[in-house]
Length: 305
Ligand code: NAP
Image (cartoon, rainbow, N blue to C red; front, top):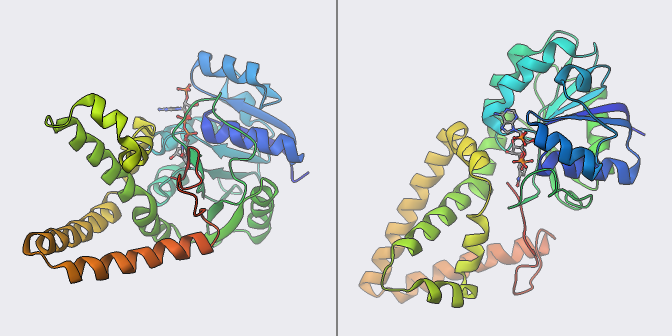
């Protein structure tokens, strides 16, 4: 057992997966949970990934050694303000938000002295959300990034690392600004492109709806899966990781113009060279064990944010 009591605030996909995973591996003595809506709390009681679901945030947080903020990034500050008065001295507070600088700025001011704040982000998810969508193996062999700041307590960090490793994740530690740039490249901008591509298909009237569905396995299907991700979560990601996403999007647009020009001028050599380089990147991802070479990308609905 790593923590005597863990409190999950927000009871959606990530929190419910953590509950299932902690129970499966016996990592917490007691898991408490709180969500803002009575409906979510009732479902969480029925599913049973917490030992106790509380109707008041104070009861969930009381005496917890670890408090996990598992709400959309834009709600982190309000939830932190609501729970902070009830924190046990010496407790660790973490979060699972997809953006890190904005969470640090929103949460830190509310935390009392003597509490350890170690932000985190598991790179694992699906396009599903809510308390029924979690499962114990979500984090297995996926990365969890923990954020190190000046003054982070090494013991608190080691314990949180052990929790994530106990849930099957590989842990890396980095600073918040670096995290946000990396995620803008590997997750946030690709999601925006998927949203855009699905939006484009909706506008192309030359292709009928039935043809879009029928022939979707040609590539479009993978865009639609990503574009089905939770609208609130992704709205908050783009609003809070604005600078990094706009930077990567600018570079993306420049590359797109170069490819557009190569197509227009019939520059096959440029296209071939470009696609040869991108193919090598794909191979290195498969070799790093981050995906399989299976034609369906081996995902079966898994994704990261
Ligand atoms: P989710 O399944 O949609 O669950 C969100 C939870 O937050 C729900 O319990 C919801 O409560 C609560 N919530 C929503 N808005 C709130 C507000 N304004 N104030 C208080 N509580 C609020 O979300 P999730 O996928 O678990 O995501 C949680 C966090 O993990 C997000 O910060 C996200 O960026 C991050 N994350 C997500 C993924 C992914 O792929 N999904 C991957 C890695 C990290 P009610 O049900 O009562 O409304």
